Image (cartoon, rainbow, N blue to C red; front, top):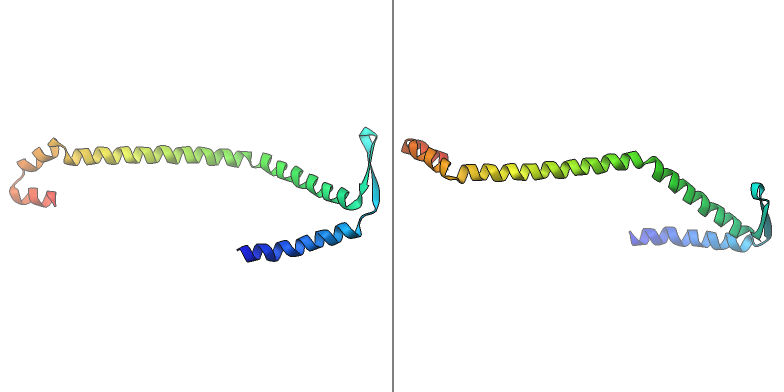
Amino acid sequence: MKRISWIITIPVTILIVVFVLSNRQVVEIDVWPLELSLSGPLYLVMILALILGFVVGAGAMWVSSGASRKRARQAERQVRSLNAEVARLKREQEQDTTGPAAATATAALPKAQATSLRA
């Protein structure tokens, strides 16, 4: 897995360095509704635009998956509750089979049946 990471990381890094070195000219960006004008190297403007797009896309995905996360949390709570109930029922069942009532019930049976129940 580490090798695959390096196989992908090294070429991407080389491409980014080549892109930065070949796009150093200064560009001016006008932000229309604010009457704001920014200038900077083209590579910086493009990288910032990519980062902004990533953040906006990740935020949109996070908001749209909110219902799925809520269902998953509810299902997890229900599973924990059901597991606790199963454990409680198993404890009750073990107490019923090892308690005094079980010994009394097997004592009242004929000897052959009582030994087959205990086994």
